[in-house]
Every structure is written in C-alpha cells, then in structure tokens.
Length: 333
Image (cartoon, rainbow, N blue to C red; front, side, top):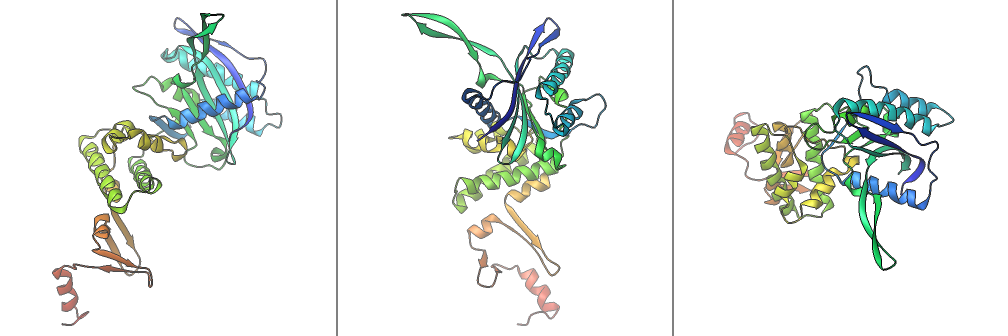
C-alpha cells in the first residue's frame, strides 16, 4: 500500500508555442479517492514498458535535484513550494520542444515498502457520457490510463547514493526528451550492465512462473537467440517486441514482469554479446579450478550435482583432457 505524504495538482496549458502555468494554492487533502488515484497511476506506471532509468545529471542548468534536496532537508516540507518551482522548470522545458498538450500535473510524495518516492505525472481530461434523468449528458473525467509523460524519483535510493533512482517513460522517438530534461535525468546506457540486468530478470522470470527446468532452458535459449540477432544487427532492445517473440500466447505476462519499475531495466540498448551467453551458461571459479557449462548439460544429466558433498560430476570428459592428465602423471591407466 502507498502512504501518501503530500499531494499537489497544478495545471500546464499550451498556448501556441508557449506554456502557461496555473498553480494550486495548497496541497490536496489525502482522501480515499486521492489514495485510489495515486495507487492506480503508480501501478499503471509500473506496468508500462519503454522506461529509462538513471540518476540526476551533473550538467549545469538543471535545477530539479537542488529543488528536491531543499525540500527533503527542510523541516517544514513545503510541498507546494517545491512543486511550484518544478512547474516553472517544466514549462520552460516543454516550450523548447512543444511536445506536450499540457494537462493536470500530479505531484505525489508517498511512502511504499519503507522507501519514499516522488511521482510526477501529466494527466489529461477525457470526454465520456453519463445517464441523467432518462437522457445522456457529456461529462469529463481524468484519463488515468492515457498518460504519456511520467517520472519517479526514489528519494530513499537517492539519499543512499545508489546508481539508479530516477526513471521516466521514454515512449517512441524523442517526444519525451523535454520530460527527461525537466527531471534532469542522466540515463546513459551501459550496454554490458544493462544486458546483465536483463539476463538476471529473464532468469528470475522462469523461477517466478515456476517453469520446469527444460521449459526454462528452452525459454532462455529463445531469449539468447533473439538478443543475439539484435546484437548482430545493432538493434536496440524493445521489451514489448521481445515478449511477443518469446511468449506469443501471453506476452503481457513477460512484458509486465520486465516493466516493473523496481527492476530498473533500461530499454533501447544494443545487447552485449558476452553477457547474452550467460542466459544459458553457468560459470564459476576458485583459486583451484574454473568451470563453464550449459543449462542443457544439467537438463541431460551430463553435469550432476551431489548435495551430500557439494560436488559436481562431469560426464563425457574429452579424451584430450584425459591424455593431458595422464601425460602429466596426474592419473594412471
């Protein structure tokens, strides 16, 4: 459950190529409706693919980190003051790109599972109809499912100097660039690290969905093939497309798993070739030995684990290795 600490809604309106801001005078009361709306927005944001994750930029001219720092450090916690200053910066960045029609800008400071977050979302109105006195009339309501611009700052992770604590909806093309610049997000892509994170997530998915060993191996082999082709073609990863390829009968199960914000998985990177191999191979080493084998070898019992003495049994040892050991007097016969 989300514990809402502060909630404010301001308005951003587009007038030709400029934007005007209408600021709220005070924060909104924390009601059951407010909690339901913020929970809905947060859950929808979590489920969206095409997110970028990063940290505050060190570039000059980006005031967001300083504004947030002042708010967090202040005993008064002036949320209206913070969000009003952020709105001024949002309007400036929006005017540079003219990419947004504007809307109601939701700012929510909330606590979830021991961590504090700041969520920013632009919500527009949607026209619908309602029955009234035997007839119908037009009514407007918040289009909670239709938002395209949103971002989240994990305030707790930021205070702990973690690598990634800021995320935003990237969308298609560069339409969200202004929102990234408003947040001051540096989402520089680290291809090997991002690939390793994706590899770990795909392995976790096979466990979370309780796949059998052979099913998991086949799934991860398909993923390796898909990502390998993307690597050769220098094509960036698209989670939705990958989910459709790997799980054509139920792609949303995989895409939702990968999209969850807490996983901090970036999209749009070209997968790293060496990291892809770890989908289907296991490696380990000590000062005395190094081992590298495939999941398939375990499935076919060519590699066996003996839990009684924590040992691995390798079948089908190649003749060349046996000859080397014999020549060096390690074995006889």
